[in-house]
Amino acid sequence: IGILIEQHAGALPAWLAPTQVAVLNITDAQADYVRQVAKTLQNQGVRMVTDPRNEKITYKIREHALQKLPFIVVVG
Image (tube, rainbow, N blue to C red):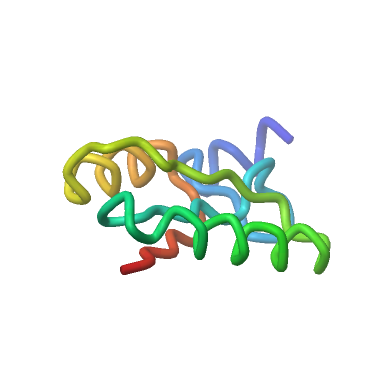
C-alpha cells in the first residue's frame, strides 16, 4: 500500500480509493436529488459521501479535490 500511495502521490485509483465519489449540491433546492443520487450509488456498491452543506460550490469542490477523490459529482 505504501508503494501505491507513493507512486500515485496519494491519489489512489478509483477501485482502491476508500471514498470513490463525492456528491455535492449547489443550493439547498437540490438536497432531495442529492439523497436520491447517493442512494442509487450506494445500491450499486460505490463508496461515496454527500456534502449537503450550504457553502459556495467552489469551496466544496476545492475541499474534496484536496482529498484527492477520484470523482466529484455536482448536482444543480
